[in-house]
Image 1 (cartoon, rainbow, N blue to C red):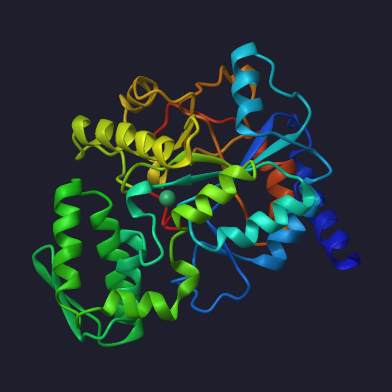
Image 2 (cartoon, rainbow, N blue to C red):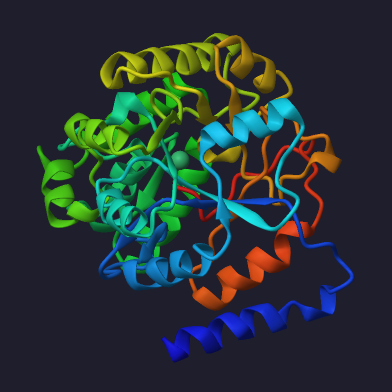
Amino acid sequence: MFAEWIQARRGYLSGWKWSHVRRHGVRVFRYHGVVTEKRDAVLDRNQLPLQIFRAQMDFLRRFRVLGVGELIEGLAAGKLPSRPSAMVTFDDGFHNNVLAAEVMASRRIPWSLYVPPGEVGPSRAMWSVEMSLLILLGRAEKIEALGRTWSLATRAEREKSFRELRARLKAVPALERVATVEGLRRQFPAGESARLLGEHPQLRMLTWEELTQLANAGVEIGSHGLHHEIHHAQQTADLRVRELVASRAELERRLGRRCRAFAYPNGNFVDTSPGEVEGAGYDVAFTTVSGALEDRLGADRFLLPRLSASGSLHGFVRTFWWDGDRPARPSQAPQPRPSEA
Ligand SMILES: [Zn+2]
């Protein structure tokens, strides 16, 4: 405990040079998953060690932590807390979120989870995760995709191929992405994705039973698109709207409660996204634009800022106290971030 106290003090003091900055507003933190042990730095890039997550939540429990319902009411009334406060969100719906749920329940901290319902299931991995498993660990020497050959001969070449292919697949229309991933799958032995997911169960998705249990325990389940399709300029409006409407309908049908919140897959949005999200019946939507949520910014409830949760307690405390006050500019579309799923 003493070591954690020292780390928290260091995090606070390391931002002291910005002490002229006002420290208030809601800090919405974004996580993906937690693991008892990180096994592969690239594969587990979005997974936070459970011990660090616990320490971060122990720090946060001293402040007011809002649920989605309180946020919606606060935005509607123009009354968000002015004192430093927080929200906790998880994207993607990894099965390992049940570990996070225990941490949150024992500390009575509300949180919300954003899942792509088209990807839910015990034998599933999200397309980006399946691709990372195949390219980093799959049994093949090379693959063909997007009109060229990619070498998988060494680990370094695998990582390079994975990074380049992922970046390109995040920018093509959904149909081309689906066809490319299917084409990739065929170049590995049959059942390779399932075999690799079996070896890395930390990356499988939550089941509907688990999601139902979480929802019944008070966790707010929001949408992350139907298949985690990214809102970008190459994507048709039809596709974006279908992902918004179908995911919300499926979550409501399965979980028997209103789906009020949306988190943009990969954090990206286009000019028409906020209107499309509102038209699909959501109350709020989260981006990955960095900043604290404050009334004085005239918060657009369909372009709410979030902060990436640091991989250390020290970094988390620093983000909580200091980074959240750099003004958010919701009109700026964020670039796809390499740390994203
Ligand atoms: Zn995501």
